[in-house]
Image (cartoon, rainbow, N blue to C red; front, side, top):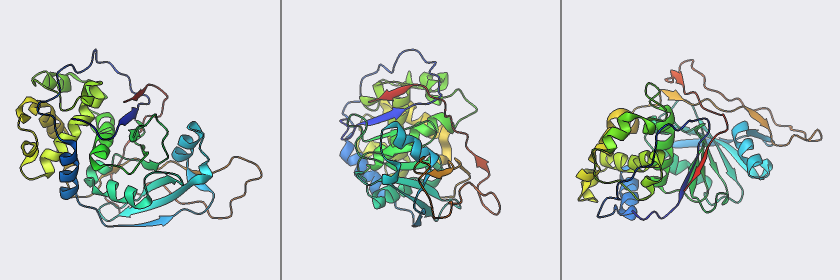
Length: 304
């Protein structure tokens, strides 16, 4: 597949134990990315939502950390809560004033993901280009950064990274480094995309686009890939172990907790007059029963 946008992954606190990289050729004929994207958009529909803005001067710690890491001014971010109708807890988004993705782009694209998959995103952030032309990337905290108006397929790829790290805690972490994943890969004769040959995590995330497509688009991946059987064990393993997490419908049962609200500036002269936002997952009367632990120890950086 010829990716129209480059993706990148920032991995924190996850130890890679698998030796080598996926070495099988890209499936032939290549999966047409334009058709993959358009079919996903036509079958993963937007979720109804409302949103409201944080008071001036406040930003989530996770977004401030990103700004400081990349020498952006935290005060240049707009912070807002998005309330999707299929989840009792909102998501907090952060958008830089020069970001390529608009607020509506962010709300629309994340809302198209199945809610039980969307739950593995903590903060969605939009920035100007930071990462050598990458379109999107993910921290193992569950935070996803988009540097342009996001493609839906790319967002599926990015959230698949979070699923790899967090959704299957009963298995080796990340799941893509486990013998289960790699033994199934070895039963196939091809890799879903050329980018999926980069390493096991990218193989899992690229397979995620195929696995979700196969579940939500009538006719499945055979619509756009005649040689689907050469990658079958990969996308079937992705589907089988993640189960209803990648299926539309239902409601969220687990979520990352929010990062704490902090002031945009550390200056002693900086004064905030708006009230501190109320954040955090409230279990009372809600359908959320579990907080997903995030890994926040500095570690390996991988980019594509």
